Image 1 (cartoon, rainbow over the protein chains, first blue to last red):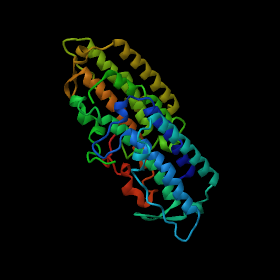
Image 2 (tube, one colour):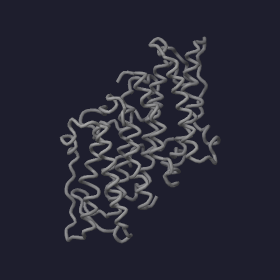
Image 3 (cartoon, chains in turn red, cyan):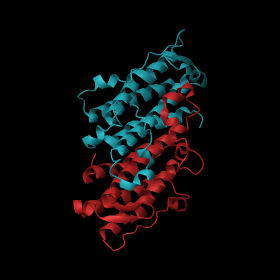
Image 4 (cartoon, helix red, strand yellow):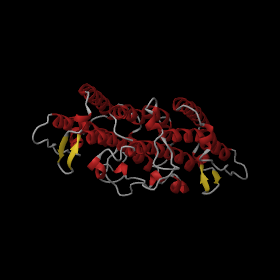
Length: 180
Length: 180
């Protein structure tokens, strides 16, 4: 598929409702499950997505659209959410994420980006030169990757409960090297 | 986590709404996307989950609960949905899946399974002896694995659109050996 702004927004607007369907009100052991030390639980993923709304995708798009002489992104803190959300309830984080995402998509829609604007460059702190189009495509993939992660992390909690089914349930053996 | 019937049903009841949030009304290119030849699209996954409701999980649980001398499962046809749903609309499949799942969970709840019943054996056509507990745990993991698959398959459609972000978006390079 070639990048398309409407197709992208069609996915981006679904992420809050997808995570709500999967997680809102679910029992605590599923919420706090991980794939091992230093990996994200479903709770962490929602916090990480909130960080993305506040400090990553739209702030970086703004830097690109400002067309300054040095469109350098701020480094992104993958662990900001740990301190920010200590003691928060998942339900309120899901609400917060939905509100932030809706506001960011309203803004993105209001920009009415042209093909030329989608080519605007930015300087990523470690990846080098990227375009606004690539940033927006990465936003979509990032959402879907974290939805997949939440489902995978939950699945792995029953790794020892399925008996001989393990080889038929490949999600249990995916990503054996834990990652956050 | 140890198998728990309520924790399991808490996940099983969420799958139809999760897939609706992600897929109901989404643009056609996302629905028909795959990871390569002979792999499942999101459309195929919903059809495959319907097959599971009609021919796999609950029918096999019934065989176990019947306590017959030879509790052998019928082999499961992974491609039944291809012919069954040719020409169907995703929206109607999502509705059908939700109705089948709700009815199957009503039944499962009504059985009020005891720990002893959860130990009842069944004969899987290729995996050998399994228990009802393992069957129900596998049902949960199977759901979550297919949710992860839908998100991953969609993400991969933007593989060539994210530019230098590929190494940061591991969902793009997961499961490089295509599978259905």
